[in-house]
Length: 100
Image 1 (tube, one colour):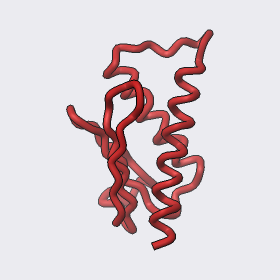
Image 2 (cartoon, rainbow, N blue to C red; image 1 turned 90 degrees about the vertical axis):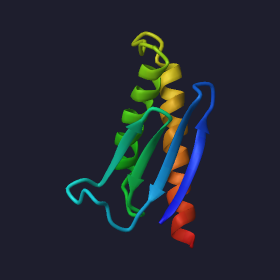
Image 3 (cartoon, rainbow, N blue to C red; image 1 turned 180 degrees about the vertical axis):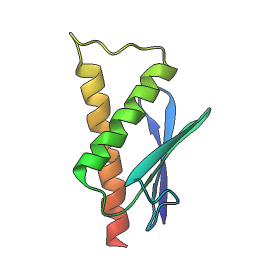
Image 4 (cartoon, rainbow, N blue to C red; image 1 turned 60 degrees about the horizontal axis):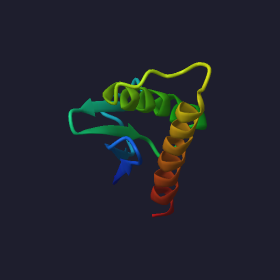
């Protein structure tokens, strides 16, 4: 298992990404748990881009909720940048874990 904790810029939230060989919830490809001081994403090293994007949306929505920000359908750049950043972080952690 590889675990990495990152601070999400601008939003003062922490995300821990755990790449695990098996999930304790085998019916899921990945899942995120939310705590008052952080979020924890459990994901397998063979997660698809779709799974990564799916979980990134959950994480971004939680960040916005914690910061009392409503997504703006007429100006979705903040949401798009945040989701893109989250996806890159998750993919990077998975990539590094696959090299070990």
